[in-house]
Length: 324
Image (tube, rainbow, N blue to C red; front, side, top):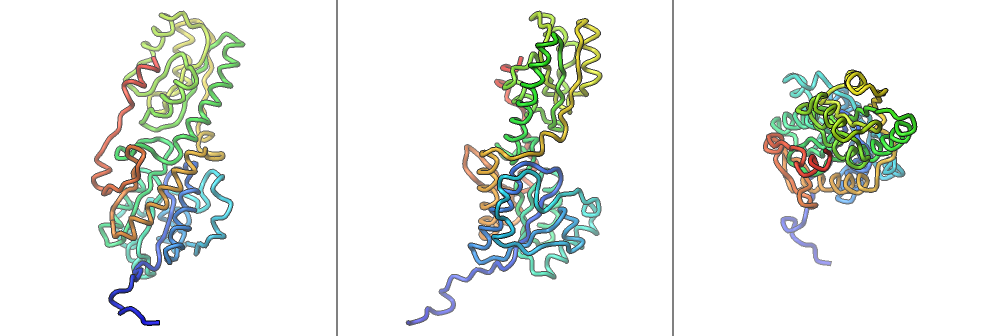
């Protein structure tokens, strides 16, 4: 058999890439990890999993990944690589140390699965010569450059199930229940779960006041039901006290908190997590340093991290109208 000249052979220069999860966990992160590992191996690249986010780089705490290590994880919540916030990596010294460790150990690229804080760290690594790709994994849906973030669908469905259950008891006892959902300063979970759960009123952002909600409940003669509150718009306990005082109807406060993050991811989060994780490896192979994986018009694309982090996202006015 005649061998082709070496210069004409397709040689994969990528030898080793890392993957980590950082910040808050989101259902579907394991699907993304699995896709990164499987896609890397299929392309002759050795995947390395860093434990507990950027801490894993600085502490050289990692595991060599293979197909067996990601077998049977796609249905699990949380992240098999663990996650944590790394304050040391916020500093220039920590970032420089992290980049040096990557270079020393032959890490050709890193896939960072997380939210905006995680991507700031990824941007710093990229500036120091480490090929870095971000995969939006946050239940908050607050990354402006993408229409979807891993974990959002699961969080909404968990919140809706809780709201439905709480609504049954509220109706039975002729009382109100204020349900506080997660989302930080973004009201997407509140708006979606509130509409799906047929809430009497929705606090999606801080522009809505308790007085306005009271007037809304009074206007439509509501005497029971759920009021959904985004955590960035206020706290359930004082809100419930105001409603009870003004309307003279017993009102309970319910904080869902971390219950929205755990549990089995929905099919959508499993599929989108898989797509976004695999595409991250594709971007690294193409030499797209300093990029975020995005979903736009249900298609995958890459946006530079610095550009993507400038973009903001607001709740749809049409959805907000439905929630009134």
